[in-house]
Amino acid sequence: MAKKKQLLEPEEFELETNTVWSFKKRGDWATHDGKYRGNWSPFIPRNIILRYSKPGDLILDPFIGSGTTLVEAKLLGRNAIGIDINPSAIELTKKHLQFKCENPGKIAVRKGDARNLKGVLDESIDLIAAHPPYADIIQYSKDIEGDLSHFKIKDFLLEIKKVADSCFRVLKKDKFCAILIGDTRKKGCVIPLGFQVMQQFLNAGFTLKEIIIKEQHNCKATGYWKTNSIKYNFLLLAHEYLFVFRK
Image (cartoon, rainbow, N blue to C red; front, top):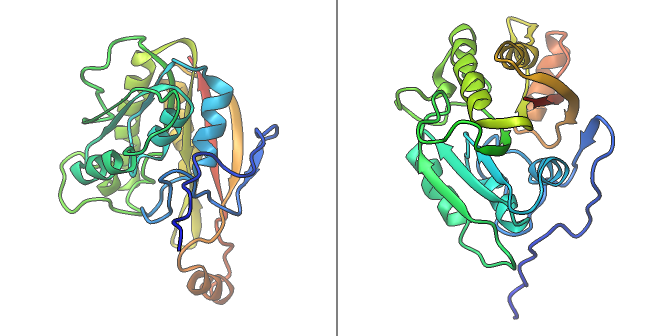
């Protein structure tokens, strides 16, 4: 049986034109897959990159995870720097970047800390696209010092302020920084983590270009939580926020 040809772009794609995004099929072209828990659909960085950058621009992702943003940057002819504090994320990303395409962007991947972005020059970046952890909802390592997925909300926000300051430092004037973040729930009540993170970026000096509502689909344990939402009278959180900031 012949091996299925690897697709290097989505079969159906239209640039998003409103502030509600919904991708029922998360996207599996190139090396994309949904195995890395919490990674964002490649449709999100594809939209961000196409709308807010041009070929040859330099993109930064300070939370690479499984490398979704960097794969899209390579496919779309953008150069990119990918940083993560977790060595396993770096190795997985390098694996996902091992494909050939026409006119690929140049991609650099290295271990680093989003809170200081050491080695990234001031005002050297054309676009930032990032999907940070949502405080301690999903922990991505066991004991890596500085891993933001281990911080409780109060301390997480203090660390995110450092991330926002670093992003502001390295981004060029009038360029854009896109951050996907969701809320959480404690003791039955919503903690507006998304807007709290948004405020940290505004405090760093950014202005707010867009607030995009991204609908969630096919979340793990949905059946369990659906049963409990009825039993304990709360609504399931089915959206995230994509904030687009301008320096």
